[in-house]
Image (tube, rainbow, N blue to C red; front, side, top):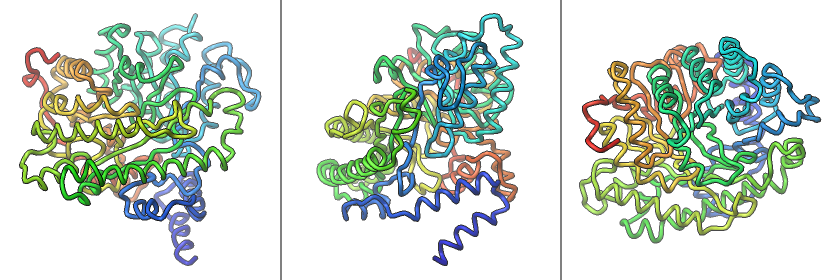
Length: 510
């Protein structure tokens, strides 16, 4: 008890935390005072050793990790529970969404999905001038950042070229806010080249949006569709993900004698343990928490059958390089064909194993493999399947090395290409790099520009100026600034090498 009391007192007395942030951290500590759902001894040991990981989601899974409501339902029907009438105009539609967001839980305590905003709002825009639309979006965007200050909160636009999508892109670049995160869903058969250029030009200004490969994502899901949430996670709309567990591939490789030992014995053993951890957490959520008795289900914002489980992996680069060393091979992940092929075979094996394992209370009866973007304290373990920070090759080689991997990670995979600021003098280069990456099979195209204050960490956004203030013990009103500061300190996320784009575009690449 003295240790717990000291921890709680430290939170309550922390001058850098706002009252809302203190309340959230105190709630997390209270949950973690409860006993963990019962695990087998070997699973518990692997979890304690962090070879498998529950992402510190908490000891009592009383809400899903990610919830993706179908907001078209509340705009069409209103809400009896929230006493909301059916909206009749754009102001009422935006107001309805603003209210709805406050009642959608997630692992962060804030909504991670704001919906496909252009498609939600377009039906209410008749008679609204472009100037009025921009002003309404400006106020909406400011409201989101100031009242839900969490960079895991995510909006989608596209794939069509429409006035709401253009207004959102314009205002997002103008305000340069950390929140909300933003993805443009790009479809070469639907999106115009003009709006794709607008999206890549925005990246030059504010490192947003992500650009998602809509045809690839769409083929993964059913007719009800999908949303991109949090960092870059693709999940079923009207559902979400009950949990995200992950395997530390570096730790598994360190326990292996050789590549064959890794693939045939050690990795399958820890994969099974991670499945059992996933099953335990899902069972608690569905059978004990009472979450699915909420108005979100009764009013059909969500459907309990549309919740999947994200089966994550990270530290692929370190795992491959360790196995290369054990085989006395010099090739490094991201730079050597044999090393890259080993990584690809590991991903294929992971994918096949996840597809083969039935999972109760999971959408389509299976988990979804995920290239997990890391935690802020993952030391010497590169997120997902990425190339280690500070060693990245030129952007074209970077894309070509990792594009084949993307097919195996349907619930999310992303690289962050850090581009030298000189690209601002040649925006066509970034546009062509984006098109080439998507044509090569990238599920997501994401880039930072080295001179921008607003940058991506592992998918979420931070302002470098906010991190400086945080490090000066001034705190931050944005919840994710502290995570970014820790990631910069422990993971070296700011060590990414900025690369020049332009002369590196090889013939036929785009």
